[in-house]
Image (cartoon, rainbow, N blue to C red; front, side):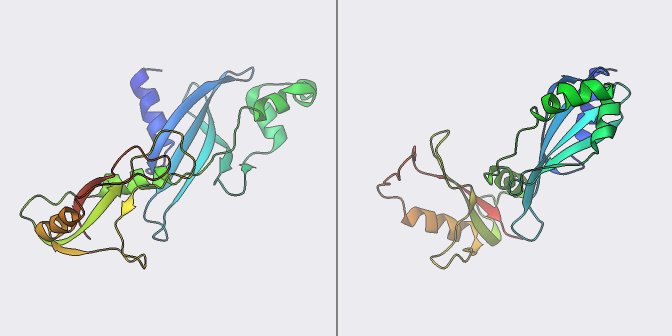
Length: 202
């Protein structure tokens, strides 16, 4: 199968959601391709959701979901053991002896950080150009060192009560940012001042 066709298959595994697809390895006597998808929907229930799914894909492009993980309840198997054994081309003896355990060791629990949802939201934003008149909001992207635990994710600027700040124009939003243009003191793990985008609010 051509690389272009594989790219199309990988894209289809995301089911139209924002995210990424990772090819891990060939598995089983049938040499199926093991893929992991990390997908997010930023609009569901306002807060959005994200999860990981694992698929086995054959050379003719047929895919079978084998596991899913929402980051909270751990990995949930989506296929019966005997069906997976047959799909991978093992005998029952091989499967029971070591191959089943070996396969599931390749499926690592997905850890939700919120970054995928933030990235999905960011992709949907429409920048408000200078001079734009209409409702605007400010998208803030924190600047933390890679690997810092519990670093905040990108989100809209809000007031002390957690209510999103809405401005009547780009100029008003820019004026708000300009008011806070003095010295910036970094929090623990923070590499520098956050970056900001003034976007149209819908």
